[in-house]
Amino acid sequence: MKDEIAGVIFDLDGVLEFQGKAYPGAVELLVSLRRRRVPIRVLSNSTLKSRRACTGKLNQKGFNVYEHEVVTASFATARYLETLNPRSCWVLLKEEGMEEFRNFRHDLNNPEYLVLGDLREDFNFQTLNKAIQLLYKGAKLIVMITETVDSSLGEMELTVGAYGKMLEDTAGIEATYIGKPNHYIFDITLETLRNIDRSQILMVGDKIGTDILGAKNASLKTALVKTGEFRESDLESPVVVPDYIFDSVRDVEKLFP
Ligand SMILES: [Mg+2]
Image (tube, rainbow, N blue to C red):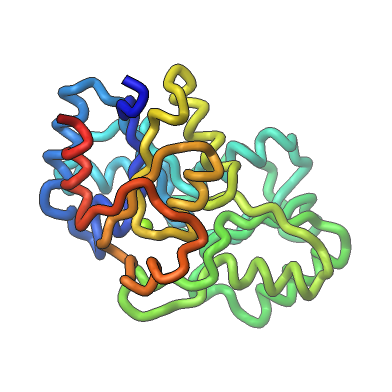
């Protein structure tokens, strides 16, 4: 059947879990999809989590996922950086996400690439000044995600994309952005689902501007869930219209009669 869904890509935060807890029905949904032999992927714009750490945290919450099914923005950025065969890089990132970059040559004084992830409280006057000086000297800028604010912890916080845009504007350069909605992270994820027609792959997300937009651009089917960071106002003049809108991730089951 043409409309049949043969693979599902889930956003993580706000879809499968929120603020550290799995959504009701999410674990069972994944079990049910596996029973139907539907390939599953988890696609997260997290930069702080490596693929390994993200898989471990999901499994601690009762999910049963494998490392090869999980793509984080830090993982995708490292894969992209590999294709550039860089002489050296300075990766501005904290926590386990750094694991993805252990095979690169790190040079904080004269890097070929500045790779921007979440540096949390270390995005300070000194660090940002050093970054801008390196960009003026010719270093190239890769930014892990486009998003400028993050409300996943409750309070709104500035995040990676805000610093990326500031550095771009100040240095008068153009950065490469990797995470959703950009095509790089989708390319890396879809490479592992090559045997399925894109029109039969469903992306499930809570954000129109990242999950749904990026998935549409990649010719995937899309389902917006009204959980996580979703707000009713998101539907007022959306940049793109999702194929399905569900109250929660458990409704994805309805697409598998
Ligand atoms: Mg989300």
